[in-house]
Figure 1 (spheres, rainbow, N blue to C red):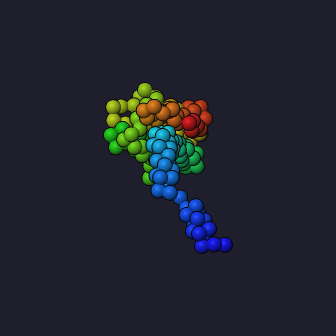
Figure 2: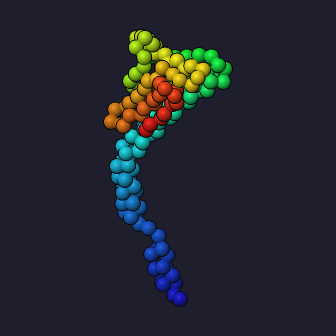
Figure 3: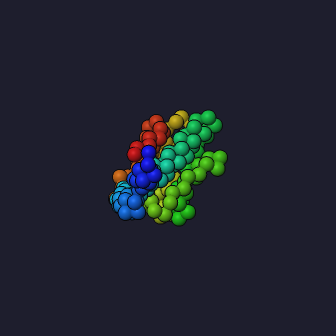
Length: 153
């Protein structure tokens, strides 16, 4: 092979600066298009995790009531943005999330909401709905007859 031929092959083996710039521009364009879609998924995942932690506190309160034979109260503090259950169990939700709460009328005030779990497994029942802008809600339901907690979303 002649020296001129090997020089030609070496030049064709790499990428030009223009080709690299075009590829980087396409990657940047795809990233800017994908980010808004992924951002919503991160918010949705956070809502689902908040719902799971709230459901876990309710399930723990029911379990504690059944095992101890005592009435147990789970208290949602609207100012502190926490749900407290027996044994120090606690769930929090972020400032980005809003809660809509349904519970027995006598157990709701402007600052707190309570759910009561009885030794036989029943409860006062209700719902906690977690919402964020432009995302489907996550709902945690407590069945009043069975006390079972259902996490939807």
